[in-house]
Image (cartoon, rainbow, N blue to C red; front, side, top):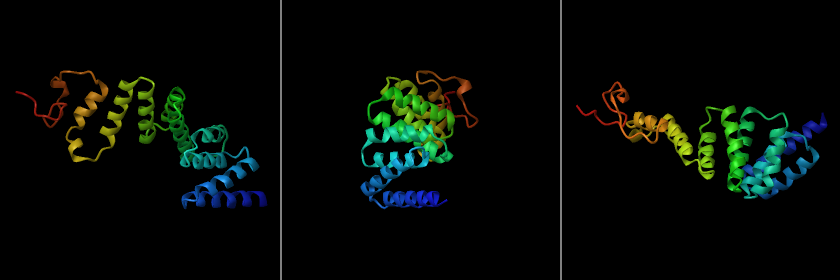
Length: 187
């Protein structure tokens, strides 16, 4: 039990150091903890995270991979590790790996808009700008509280489904009498 208490206290101190801006000291402690507890997914995730915030993305990757391969991450930490790994792959120019990681993450966490946004960026990077734009428009339409955008939500949703659409018909009208562009229908 002493090992678990020591592990928990040491991890909490290291995370607190990172949160307090003492990132290099946090990194040193987390690397030591990772060496002591190589199969601990939570420690691996925290170690990856601190490398990421220090701009040491290449060093973060193996810790993210280890964290995701293990068990013991909460759902929120797993989501964070998937986002971190996918984003890190993208930052490193490893675009296909970013798309694969983030696509899997979106499948696992379909309601997570941050994952979808990072996936959209990675899709752009692999030459799938159309798919990325469609995904971003969908997230924007579903999440924006901006009154200027809310007025155009039907149009944004319509074009998210078909970016190449050039005409609208009566089936595109919503209950307010606005066409999918958010403008009054022409009589």
